[in-house]
Length: 387
Image (cartoon, rainbow, N blue to C red; front, side, top):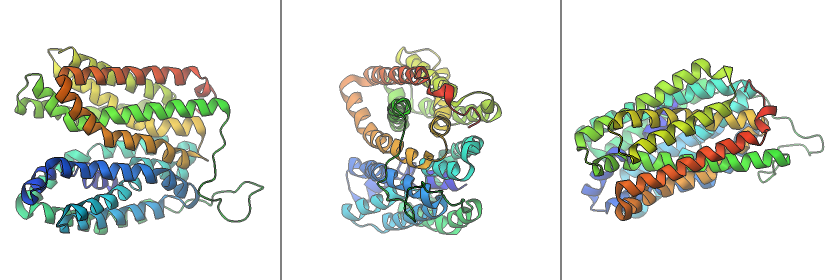
């Protein structure tokens, strides 16, 4: 429930509210939509520090701070009267996203459960997949009855009344983090480095590329999917119906991963995700006569990719450095997600749907190759399969 509300009131908020905000305020739609990009940049900049804080103090204080930032940002958004106030609200929302969405949640679970966190991470992504399904209708319902400003204020109140108690109840205090023998008393400074062997450094660099490219694809599709489908001659009503297949496909694939994931290494989850995403995008690029199948493949791949993004670093690098590594992985990924809408808009303008799908296929192919290279490093053979 916490992740559903956090995602629905931040990342997915403008999908429903962007046009009404632009119409009421007279601001350009690009300025309104740019608020989310600003928030994602802020989230990315803060992610390494957030990961370190979770590593040394546990997730509870960080998740509470993230909830407070989301609530305050939403309240400021609802009360904003000019672009400056709107931008400041999204800076707060960005801080809240960095401290409450998947990366922070995964780091918290890894800190609490160690190598046994894989199932918990899968469960979080399973329910998180319902964020748009639950919050888009709620946002539309509130928008029709109270307007976009009060919709933001209602979400702020929900964070105070629901999210804060959920964090307090569901996030116990973790055991104290042991310090290195030579370290002085007290936690190390936040800029302390993470020591990885040369092989694991290579694996981490490859994983950074994979997470970044995956975030670029996911963000671009989430913003421009309906436009891309319509540019291929599909009506708006049909495009909306087809787009609705992605969510159930994500959840269905996550159910399968939850049922069978403990029997194989998370690298196979990642490779399967990159194959499914690439296959779905290739079918859309080729104009396959059954776009529903293409979107089901893409949705399934994107669904388990979110799981692999949390479980694979845990399996490769172990629980000790997991929160800090998740923070580092999130930095370039958030930047890519922030840039993706603008990249997609440029490609649609210059190359149309065909050119945009061609670019997405190339990125997805590169991601599959990077996943194969990660497997070839041999690091996965030495990782804990039970992670």
